[in-house]
Image (cartoon, one colour):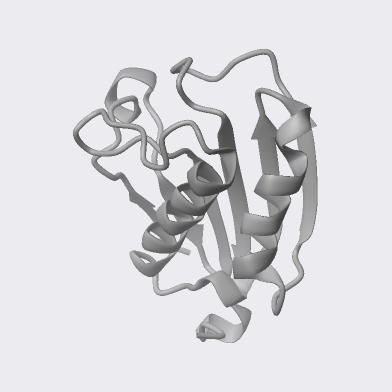
Length: 134
């Protein structure tokens, strides 16, 4: 089985030594995505819902590099720096995953790698018999 590993333009991948997305057969794992833009700006400013939407867009881009889609996602993990943001982030998640309904976990953490970031989201996907649900 071939294991595909793909990076993105993220600023931390090379330093930390990880891939944005890995695919092994039908299984796909997307590393934690945030609202960090290529130029260092935080997409969505200080709005947790907008940051979550930007993180999900990054997940979607990562999935596309391995011929997968949001419809293939079976699990998400959501990390918040303030649990009071759960509803805004949950609404952003629901807007993109309502038709998919992956299992999900949402937890508060003390901080993310950049203090401007409010949310980070990981995703696992399964592409049944090699064909994406997209």
